[in-house]
Image 1 (tube, rainbow over the protein chains, first blue to last red):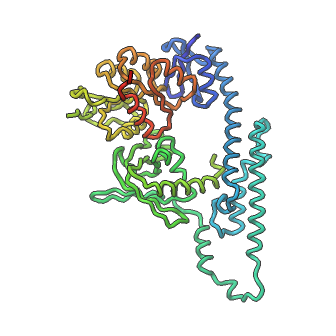
Image 2: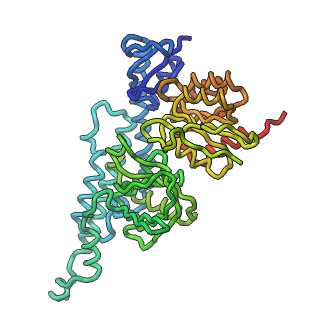
Image 3: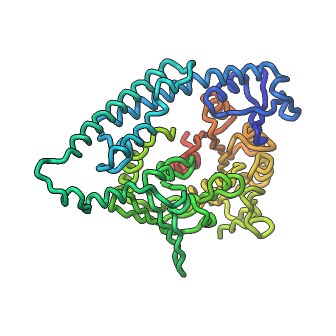
Length: 303
Length: 152
C-alpha cells in the first residue's frame, strides 16, 4: 500500500499515511489543510501533483461536510432537550424581570441561526429539521413570555398616580441589571499583587462564561480556566483566583498555577494566560458547572 | 540527588522558539525519566505541570529530531510523543525511537485521534494513545500504567 507524508500550513508533518487514513483525518476535521505531499518524506510536491491524495482530500471534505452537519443537528437536539422545562429568562440569558424589549432582543439574537430562511439550500435534512424544531420552540417560548409580561404590566384599578411613577428598589435593580456592561473583555480580570501574594479577581457574567469552556487545554473539564487579560503572569506562577458571579452572591476562591501563556500570534487574537486549579472544592466546581451550563444554553448563537 | 533541569544557555526558552533541553546526565537510574515531545511549548508546559509532584525526571524536546537525539543518549523510560510536528513526523520518530530504545515506552498524545491513526501508532509500537484535549489525570494515569512492572 502506498504511503504518503502530508504537511500542513504550519509546516508540521505527518506520515507515513495510507490514502484512507488521509481521507479519514480530513473527513473528521482533524486535518483541515494540506499544503504539500511527499511520497518518501523528503521530496515534497503540491497536493494537485499527487492525484490520489487530492482525491482523498476532496472526498474527505465532502464526507466531513455531511458528518459535521449531522453532528450539529445532534448538538441542537441535545440543547433542545436540556432547554425544555426551563423558564424563558433562563434560556434567553436575561434577568427575570427584564422588560419586554429586552426579551425580544434576546429572542431575535438566539433564533436567527435557526430561521428556515437562513438555512442554505443544501443543508442536510437532519440539520434542517433540528433547526426548525429549535426555531419553533424558541418562538413558542417568546409568545408565552410576551403573554405573561403583558398581563403583568396591566395597571390594576385603584392604583394612584404617585404609586405608578415611584421607582421601587426592585425597579432600580432591574434597571441596573439591564444596563449593558461598559468594560472591555480583558477588563473583567483584575490582578492584585502584594509582597507575598498574587490575586486575580474575575467577574463572571453570561457574556464571558466561555473562559471556562472555550480553551482546548485549560477549561473546567481539565480543572482550569483561561483568563483574558493584558496583565501577563509567567508560567509556573502560583496565585489565588477569586470568582465573582453576576446575578449570584456566590464567591469562589481557589489556589492555581499558571500553565498556559498566550504570546506571539495567539496573543494577537486573545491576550491572557491559563491556570490550573491546585484544589477546587467539589461544591464550587459544581456551582461553576451549573452556572456555565445555564448561561451557555442561552448563548446558542455562539456555536 | 535528582539532577535539576537546566536550560541550555542559562535562560528560559521563548515559547515561539526553541525548547528546554536536558543537559544533566542521569545519575540516579531508579527515578523514572519521562521525555515530553511536542512542538507546542504550552502543551509541554501543561504536560510538565500534569506530572509535577510525581518525582519523575522530566525532559523535553520540541520536534522528532531532538527527541531521537535525546533517546539515543539517555534512554528515557517513557516518551510522551506528539504526532504532528515540524521537521519530522511523529510516526517516523516513533519508529526510530522503538529501534533505538526498545525499552522506552511510548505514549502518543495527539489531537489526531482517528481510528486508523490510533491503530497505526499502536502497531508501530506505541503503548498508549491520549487524545488532546486531555485531563492531566489521564496523562498521569497513562504514564503510571506503562511504568508498572509487566506480569508474566
